[in-house]
Length: 351
View 1: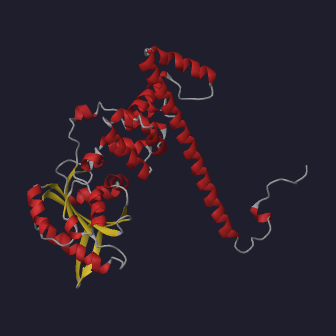
View 2: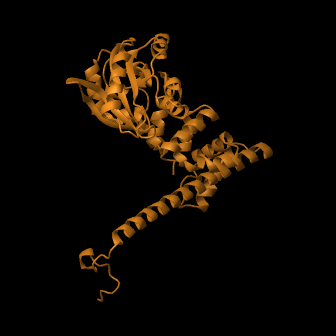
View 3: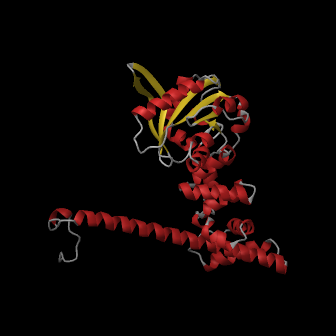
């Protein structure tokens, strides 16, 4: 058999000419980008098709009085006509109807929610009550490329209600653009349910558990946080000091010092935090970085006391609570479906 046309191992090919490696790297990037665009285009077409089918069902039921049984008939006929296509179950057709009812604006569907996979849109319909809440989670899912699993977790954790609610002095200590982003980046409270620690856990125990579960911790902190270290040493005039947790925020372009307090917030806690911010700014921060931000996490706080304590501070700081245990009773928690079960339930109509 002739070897003509057969793929040759790299070792037997001609020597690589100058500039080839850079060109190949560029080609790979362009091919990968084209693949991504193609996948997004296919997804957008599928979601728009589902919206159009749902809109048609709504219109015919409203104008011609077709009953619910038409969906069963339509599912049968579509699956007969397109046996190779999935997604035409009665259940999924009902979701298409609900999808069109929830988003009547075709332009918004095309430009926004059609960027999300169908399974994400079903989660938004199932788990959120109204358009504004759905819009917010849809925008975040697109911005941060959340998987369906992560979207479910963020909805269950009530991310919207907690975002931007920490007590801070950012409006007075940061430029407006950075202040708005910094405030939006902090929550209150932070939920550390994934640690499986009781309410009596000590600061160092919590700190160690957070580092051990750093992936979940970063997810709870939110997009943009990168972990730098735990118990980071600062040598100030020959004395040693240790920062509980140090992060870098990629969007804010600054370091973020996090200090854990096992009890109720006290104004004197900010003195220690401010000292760490000064030390990081002088010893760690690059000249192009923005001023370091401090976040004090405590088990509880009096909001008025926190606001008073921050009012005369020039360094950017925030104060938030953390929760170690869910508020639901244990017997109710055990009866709730797991994320894996939810994923399994969605598989029938998420394609």
